[in-house]
Length: 64
Image 1: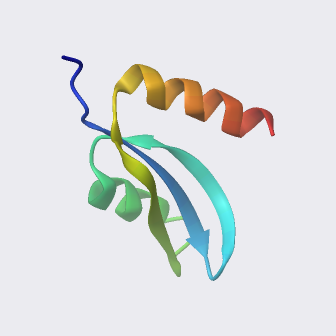
Image 2: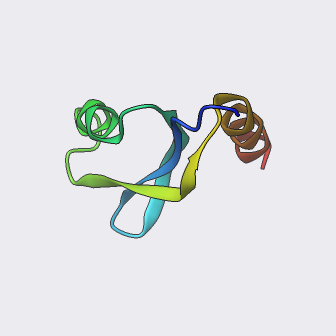
Image 3: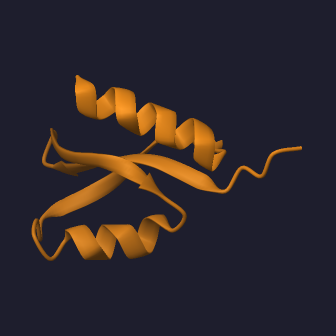
């Protein structure tokens, strides 16, 4: 059974998405992004997933 330990996320400032990505630790990643966007926050997209599926989502997200 594949390990589902990867989160997909959007980082928002107010209601605007300024970055999307994947991570294993949402809190750490939010802190990293807040250096550039201090008033932003992470919104988890969907449930935890496999790293492979998350990378596929990230590729399609960045092409849009």
